[in-house]
Image (tube, rainbow, N blue to C red):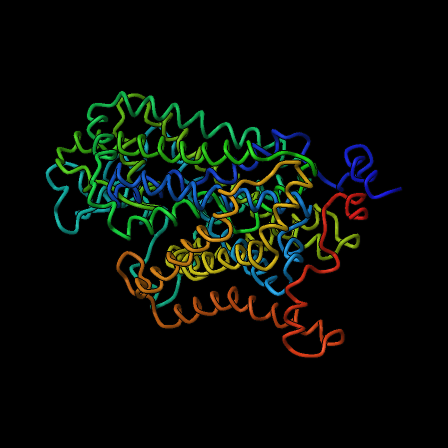
Length: 565
């Protein structure tokens, strides 16, 4: 068969991959459930509030357009073209294959603490079914440490029932980890086991099961968000909170910290540069045009964040009015504090069946956690299966092994000092390394493999020309902004603390080892790629140049097309 004929008959004669999505909607909803996660619900509202309120939306949308969408499009196109996991995809630039290896390690670290957050969510979900929400009033065992939200709100040393319930009854949190982490809480361990059973159960049949579950994972959170939004808007004082949230502080536009926060929010909200998107796209049909999918997914992600902000500040506006606090900002907490303290505290004050809204809220968080962890687990399993090829163990064995190993590692977060470790792993194992690896990914695709070659691959695959906007972003704008953010982060970096408490030296040493494990993948794989060229090229620089060229296994997922070109 002539090459031209092979190209023309791609659709009819190409071999189907071992696994693929049942249809395009499965891919779309899977990406939505992956990208719309906990960061949208508890990170965006607080970050926006801290960085100029409504003004923050401007740099956020700009960052979405020049970083979020371009990288999302790049990763989806790359995964669909090569039809493999993230490590094998980097055969396009073997010298930077360490980027992919580091991303898999960061994903592995992420899935452990995401599952622990799911365990906390499940613990609150079960408690919400009681006749009374246990964080709605002070317990006698808390003594004088508890206040009821009245005149004692600003009293030094006093805490709300929601905060005390979370820290003392759920976490049994210790003030520091100088004397160790303590023993795991059996209730949280049981919830963790249930979380991993569900994660493993979804992964156990591969894409066939996770694709079907994606319909629920992608739609249900929006149903709950709309219900909570309607309820929040009907609360007394809600509009005060929403106005407080959107009130612009224009001077903040000139604050570099605001732009740094916008870039990092887009980066982590969309789950880009962690290998998960490449994995999901690898199960697409080779000729699928994903351009519209990119626009839909990134738009849904941004809308989710803004809706979550309206819900959050609508509820907090009501909470401020009910407690007689004039400054709404004083009742705002970030991160886990927003999900497990501020939200529960506000819901407990609902006059109409607060238990129902608590169940809906925590069930939504749990479902969001499933969507994210299934994507992470799929990425890890795909890398293992690519490595072993036809000799790979059955998917059910790999999924079961991942669930058992993930559960075993995640138990550390169920100890009284577990939140210290979660914060440590998130900083050293994920956040610190992610930007460096993301810059490496863009360098691999746009500079080493080449933008022109990559755009030619997109045209070959989808039959569309890549515009100048995408080319400029991939080559200059996106890596440039990411590099600027990295420099700012390094210059602004200070010793890590948790709630103002310093970590012992041993903890920092562990964190440095964790970061080094991810970052040393870069020189390690680069050396290996150059070393493999020793018998074919004479000088060192010749071997380096050869290591920058695509490997023998690189090519399109379509077998006939690969042979033709």
